Length: 144
Length: 144
Image 1 (cartoon, chains in turn orange, purple):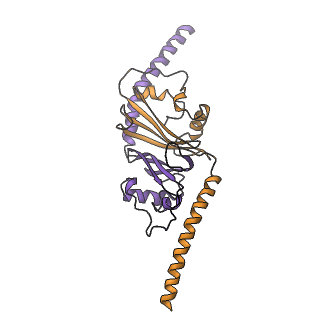
Image 2: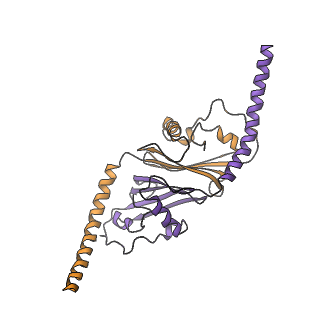
Image 3: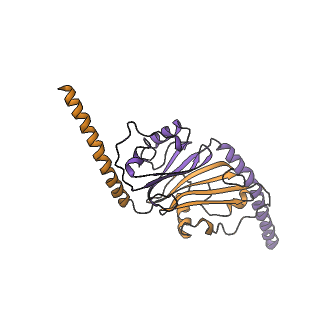
């Protein structure tokens, strides 16, 4: 009897797993609808080098702007506001005003942004001749 | 006298800015060395569709494993441990055991991981036939 119960129990478990799989598809869709507020989650990096794929990453931070502002960026509110101002278009960041006075040293630094901006995949990289010029290129976003 | 002082003050300010730029390069490098613990910061996404670039992102979370475990992933400790076990190689995730029993529905789901694993740039995407099969492919990493 124990064996039959065990077998039935196993069958029940299999059925439950199968059911949960079917439900899984449904609940995932429901979950997605509940989270359809277009998340914004980014990883920003600063690397030494002139090529994003080969440069050595020195620093990296996470930045979340939606549904809540957060991440280990030192100024997530400032960074999110700055990105909001350019609708998440990293190429449109205007940087500091006035721009810092930088020496024309060739010690390239590459910044990257990967992740999601309001539900859209983001993949951005830009190389600056040196860290001073990179620091002038955004007010908050790449200041970490 | 005030004008001369003002002019000298301006020149001093310019010199200070120029010096801070030069120092900026140096301090950034020093900062990089102080942070050379090879950061791990990732954005993980789950999207409906079969192509990472065109699929609609439903959910996204951040995951930080180094220097500290964190992010808005619901189980960052579990996810980081799982990734540690495969040395950050998302293609080597073995998933749950036993694997869930899934219907062969074609409702594709694509998962992505972008960011940095121990200082190395990560760009991963994998498409599953449906959410049930996706859920069986990792223990913690893509469970959010």
